[in-house]
Image (cartoon, rainbow, N blue to C red):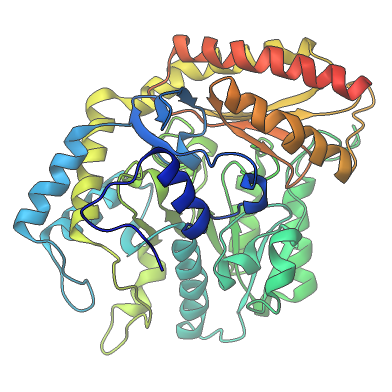
Length: 460
């Protein structure tokens, strides 16, 4: 039984004890806190957050790729308060309310091409789940009921609900929950760091067509891809990759889903990542920074062609989520998009991304730094034993390097980022989109000594 009450606000040691006893943190090894404190973040402002002890940290991960507009924007809270006073909640199951209508129209005006129908969800995994269901239902209604399979890429992360997990290409996240939703298949991703030098640059795109043909085009509903792949370390596409994929999907009547849960809303310097790489999806998923995560919200944006079969007669898309299109979330999203337009956040990212990249490239003189890749304010540093041979680490070495040293030391020095080994070991950076030269220098002042020490440890 919990021991706190609504009239008592726990602090300090009480918070630590309650966190360890009652809070089940996500993707967390709770045993790691048997002897140490749980990091408790209590305040945020701009690109920074503070813990319960008053220590300041540069939020170099935007609180998991979410808080693109920066922390502490009271105008977003004010928008939420105004909306609560007007209409706290009403469902969009057979009803509408002004904020959902206004936000759907605004998103459609920003989205490329004929992506005009917005189906709201509560978050990213639900958006991907909804997109997979929509792709299957679309083919059912257009005379192709056997088209149920979906293709994604190895090491790609698309979410944790069972349908989204079937699209996620990370075996460590999948195996204990199997059997998953049937129909998910993976193909190689675009990480060319260790490709043979004579490989066709569009080899990874052609692997998608080979998989479609192998499974038979009559059975494949959709291909789901991130513009810039998150897991594995900010893996960019080759020039022409998405244009080839678009041709392949058109040739085989397969829908192209652009998973933009991370890449939308300025992360790559554009409203949507597909704009950066010049392709037109049939369905796009969004979440996270739609509200800069001040409240949860997600959704999918469907083309008129995909939506059309559901808009006739007695037809409907038999899918829904209670809190989708929540009026408070929609009001916050509208205020968030106002901030983006007023401050030209996307333009700021495009103007400053070269400076961020140059800083990260300057770290290549550290022997452990193998590759630097990414776009916009979304980059990763791949770590290697040997720059010349590109030799990687064993699982045990990676565990010792990332969790035994890097994660804790980066945080201790005031930088929140991600040391990740869901592919080869990387340090991943996705700072809030309000960051500038001052913050880039802070990042370098932490990364350089920590990576230098890590390199020495590897050589021992």
